[in-house]
Length: 119
Image (cartoon, rainbow, N blue to C red; front, side):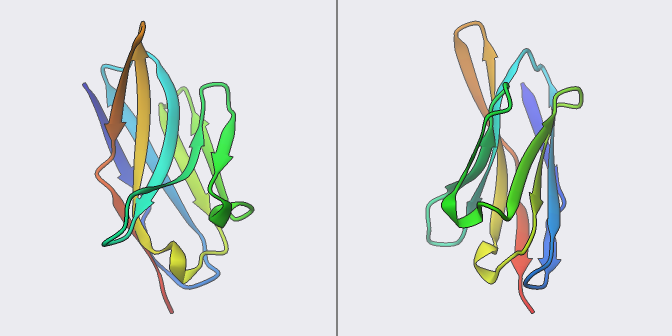
């Protein structure tokens, strides 16, 4: 079993920055992809950004140029640096980790952290 602990959410003014962290612990054999999703009430959870084991990244169009994902493989941690935040970035942010054991893939979600962008 793998546990994910998120941190770094909070209230920030438009144009401000926040950095989210998600640390994985437990029975980790091999972490493949790591990513961040977000969800607002009444809407589906959406992909914000993801990074593969090889470092390939993908971003939603709405955050390109403003958000940066990175990972520290030694710490089994993924980060999300969010700059130039906008009110529409307000959401609960969830990290997602995909691990592999041979041909088996397991998906784990963090508990979510609230990000509120407001003046």
